[in-house]
Length: 221
Length: 222
Image (cartoon, rainbow over all chains, first blue to last red; front, side):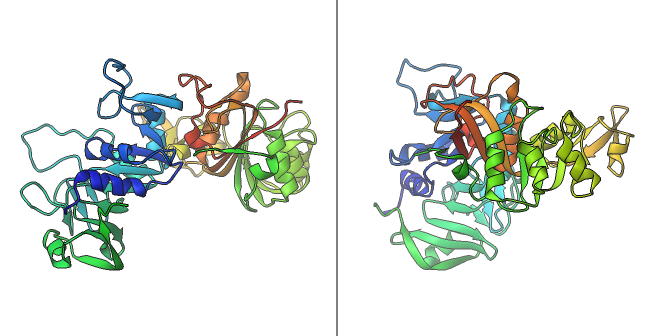
């Protein structure tokens, strides 16, 4: 059975250490928060000036001013803190955030990330906080579907879309595989059950190498 | 589970190595983490670069580090004060190197390091002895000097209260360099008067969020 994106989120959650300061990008990566589990204490950072974000408030309990980067209502856990925007970006750019999980349009084999603009010129461009986070977080994880909706590969020798940051991605988690970015390019650590190496290479434009002990992605623990 | 509290000042300074760059909070005698500096002294750590506004006075804290010849280099704005005898003694003997930095530049260089910035241009010091050899750029018709970031391996900071996440609030003017130094070092160690329960500090009024803090230790108020 192919892993779905919730399985991918669960897999990413396993790689987030207890006590980590984590920033989850908008969109897919927000799924990760629900999968971290009660055994770990993780402090979520938001670029609009929050540390210690808690779960989505119950219906009717929303505070329209207490929102996350995706403009969704959130809550604050005991121990959380508010601060101004400049300090929020000091934390991001200054290497204080341990882990960030970001979505991607494309990732290159040298760890370049493209996630803010495509070659579509009919929409005005928008970048937000992605570039600061990508250069500053200690560990940059990418969560994405392995290919686009029309089946085009997203893992490439070189990104064709404008870059968010060059050489920053540490690990990529897709619905087909977990891959590390190494000096020799993408190294497959885990693959979805039933997928052959040729299948995975066929869905990937960059050349893949494989770890000695490739694990199974999406296997329930 | 996050718990940054440690039991003793000895635990608090564990692992600080010879040759480290140590940011020491305080302005005059206000906000100086005296017990942490003395724990570092007891640890025997030497060959230090100390970044601090003043160079200590009398026989305590930074002055004691200087007396015991643990400081190779000091980066500060105002090393001369009443009772700064050990700094003057070591400096005259050529035993300690001094990098004199205007106070606002000292603070901002640490902030640049904290913020992951590659430095900044400031009008402070332009065309003075303290800017000799530094890059100059005219911005808005005024000459500015390029200043590089100043990161610490360690920051020793004094605050009033902390919770187990390392969130901090300070007391009156003892806040001074604390928030900037806490954010500018790889290892930030804080002594506080009091521990409080998680959630007890007002999230609107936490001055240093715990993301910047690695260890907190309670020191009995004398």
